[in-house]
Image (cartoon, rainbow, N blue to C red; front, side, top):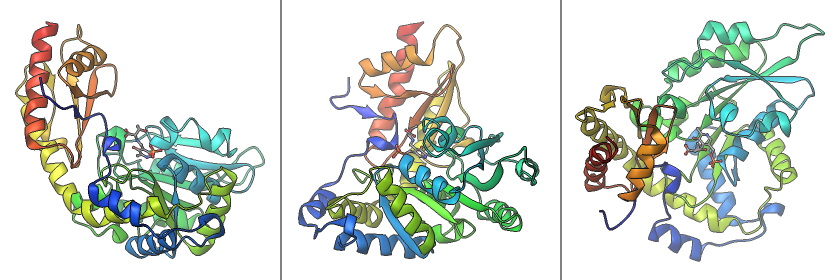
Length: 350
Ligand SMILES: Cc1ncc(COP(=O)(O)O)c(CN[C@H](C(=O)O)[C@H](C)O)c1O
């Protein structure tokens, strides 16, 4: 058994590096609710510039980043947001845009590559009618988590952006892993999000910061977002401690994402050799590997339980599949060990 845990449940499990901890301890801080935390101001300005937008706002989580963005764009009663039926906002955020924001979701099927068909997006846009909500937003997700970390191209994003603009509606990107997409596609992140009115970027996933996300957009959008963050209880005082760690994360870890993608492909190739597993290494675009269990007698929960006995942690992704997520704190030896443990787990279960 591995002496340490090989945690492949998610890239949310990354722990702050020594450099992040040192930056947190040394951070110059003040009260960010009144807008004077110097480290938060500096970090937000850096992120706005990096993403090619006018302004930025540090928020406690990706879920809050998405919620604030949707509410800022859909700030009139009777608003509707178009989003993927397999999107994180629709599946994993407790329906917050409706339960808290009163925004009506209009889902469009996500394709296996994480996109939504352009013609289905257009068909989902409401025309004025006293029976209908008013479409005010389209949401994309890049990379797309439930599709296996698939990348949306800049061209596709631009096309959706043109549709939004021509209908007078806004475009938000859930860019929790936008840096993974940028690295995998070889497209600068500001180009990838050029058509978006807002983006929510997770700092605490593959980038390895301990907490937080940052949303970017126009100055007016961020002013609205700041008020919504306060309304939701997300106003933070000496938040420079967290922004300092996030600054180190963006500086130090973006360059490691390509290696996470390489390790994901190595993992998929290793899993492919196990007869009880179906996986397509060619479909691995970024840091996620989804594989199917062939034998119906074994559930993903069964397999995850046995893997845990070997100190390998994974996440069931459906009634027959499991998700492994790679991050920079997983080594090549960990990947080899995980493959060995999957093979052993089947031997123990069958
Ligand atoms: C695309 C996307 N957008 C938003 C979020 C929410 O971020 P947090 O609220 O967890 O910071 C996540 C987290 N994703 C988590 C994970 O993948 O393990 C879980 C599923 O919530 C996400 O994957």
